[in-house]
Amino acid sequence: MKTLFLAATLCATAQFAFAEDAPITHDSEYYILLSQHGAQWAEDDVAVDARLASFRAQNGGKAPNIVSVLIDDLGFGDMGIPELNAIRGYETPNINDFSDEALRMVRMYTEPSCTPTRVAQMTGRLPVRMGMGDTAVDIAGFGLPGTEVTLAEVLKQAGYATSHVGKWHMGDIAESWAMNQGFDYAQMAVHQQGQLTIFNDDAIKEQVSVAIQDYDDKYTLDAAFRPDASAMMTVIEGEAGGPIREIRMESGERWNAAKYDEMNQAFQDKTMDELARLAQGDKPFFLQYWPMIPLDNTRAGRSGPESANGGLYVDKMQLLDQWLGDLFAQMDALGVADNTIVVVMGDNGHFTKYSPQSGFTPMIFRGGKADTTEGGVRVDAFIRWPGMIEADGLLNSIIHVSDLYTTLSRFAGADQFIPRDRLVDGVDQSAALLFSDESKARRDHVIIYSADKPKAIVKDQLKLKLPPPGENPIVAKFYNLYQDTREEYSVSTEVGAWGGQEFVRILARHKARKQKFPDTPPAFGLPYDGIENIRPETAAAVDAFLVRKASPEQ
Image 1 (cartoon, one colour):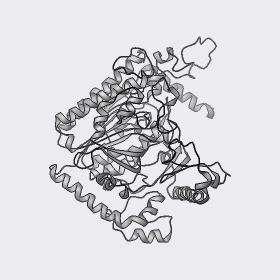
Image 2 (cartoon, rainbow, N blue to C red):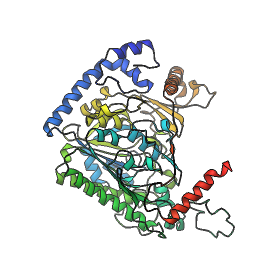
Image 3 (cartoon, rainbow, N blue to C red):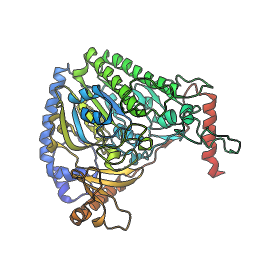
Image 4 (cartoon, rainbow, N blue to C red):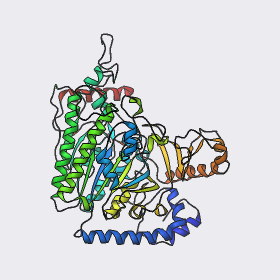
């Protein structure tokens, strides 16, 4: 194994046998831990293999099904804890009941916004590694490269049937879409809620978005300056290798709050249909449901459960709780609950731009979406696997969303299909989860990026807000996250005197590793290319985008 580390680390790693001739390549800190815990990890791997083999023997030789539910923009404590529900003035009884059957991953870290988190979960890699560390809202002409190997592709190679429903948000070019990234079937929104619930006609009237169409445009010269949500591609559907079509949107039709509600209900209905279809098949299945609600920014046409809170997002969170309750009940009715791993989690912190009217404001941690404080990247996260993972348990080890890639692959017996030709950030946390034991965790740090820049490092219980160039790390802002969850009381001198250089070395090793495995750009292409029934107004919007893109070259 080639690394950039101390000879002692190399000697230590050489002592341990790996399941694969070519082990997965990880970032630098993994090997620091391996040098100290390798012998125990090898024992843990044997125990994990035995438990997984026992499950398969009881499950007719089949691997477990996997259902992944990723919910948009929720802070820590917004689901799973009835006491905090009461403080908020709303209820999520079905998710709370689910949490009693699941293990809470207390220190689940995501990325600060939607796209990066989804990329990390799908690829097991930090999104900065392929230029996907930022969030695009409108037509952009880039996306997740086809050379990335997604979790769906890994599982598919192991014999899984794969299906995705709901939000995707990893690009508006064909190679980035779910049906071209390992899913046998996908029904997905090409963009996200910026287009669908913030730019739409009703939201504009309510001034959720301003200066788009809510003014007299007689002085406007650049007609393409403002996005038109109705001209952008909305929801597409297709099978791998088959035709892809936009659905539920006709030429000349305007996108509004009613269309948004219709889409969300359709995603829920399709998820239920897909669960029934997949449960009847012979293959283990991977069903991914990424809802668009609770984000819903208008009062127009609102219906459904109301809360004492009354917030726009909070009320829709109660609706989503009902929907997930229906999903869990159907799993029971179909007889698949006991042989299915279910992960339910948020993708990043609150969309605080729309607080407090959303009904959500940061509680335990400070900050929200796009922030690198804990409130931006710490989320509720639960994993249920009856008889295999402790019910109503707590795991306080650091887990990054990329770890789901490697861990779920291991649970599925598919880890041999994880690529060995690139650096994979996700580590295998199967031993910690199966035995609910912090001492078996294989991660003790995260490097938190904002777009393509590292902004903070968490190591153990300590967090460093990375200082600007030229500032001594000894006096940089350190926080003890157990003592100060809101990162308001820096312990710079107390920690920096001994820890400043240690954190600098973590970042230096990470950067050195990047020299061997350099970051690459995202894939670029023609937006919406390959969609069979592109509307004339959408084609015109793409033409306008291409003109603007070519303008610097003219």
